[in-house]
Length: 392
Image (cartoon, rainbow, N blue to C red):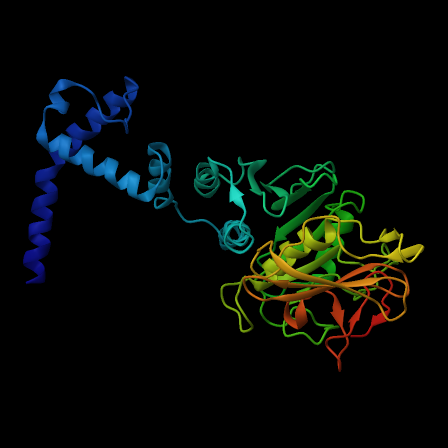
């Protein structure tokens, strides 16, 4: 049976040889004459009046309308399926790019620019060695923030990190912040050395003006010197407290560098939680000036510490901008404490300040807070600026 099949196959190949020769000759002639494939439906009456072509073209248009893309993007999406073999680090890098977009749109309700899908498709199917400075704009009018997500943006240091997220306030404060993220597909990532390399040696921080974070898939407790009792403490470090004895940094990190686990396979919470906490921190904490919170109080006739941010407050968990808000004086009588409860998901957060250095502090609950917590009392946090313990 098998021999008969092989015999039939050989006969088929032999019969096709003359046709293959003619086909190759025809393709060569087309190439010489610069005749290429055209994705646009021809308007010649020969085709327009043909019911077979009409039906095919009609269904093609319906598919495009249902998917919600234009014709050029539809063609690009078909090319995605033809991507050849690429190395795993490149796959992970592109996957991380998609996850950042997913958090911005699905979690924090940002609207991307009109042609973002085409830019994304170009990034996915394009040559990594040629793609540079790809930018997708995002905006969220309800929380007064605008974002530029860059792929392979060239910094002033001439270095090109994988991703740059430029955060801007549109609330008349003029605040801006740059969050730099670099994907490292390492089986055992060396967080300490990688931070030193990227933040300091390669100057991704651009002279300490940017925050720099590593994205990695290492789920084997990459944070060896866990300093927080939180569930994610072995997988994520947000610069909440000093962890490494860097010669080049003799101050508290204050959330300016770190590393997070980003992998579809995770044991704790949703796999996007670490990334959402990082991006949320950039918009909630790193964007604003947390050291100048002294305001005059006419009623009390003295200066009071007021940690309420100048920016629009948003829900750290669901991205909503509507809250039940309350203000109360702190126990030391020097300032105020604010509480916000989200109208949609009921997430509760507080804005307070450090009694030692007067630095603004934000509590997003035991799981979502990025500040360091006390081991036995997780609701007590440590100031990221001076390491003072704040109770309650």
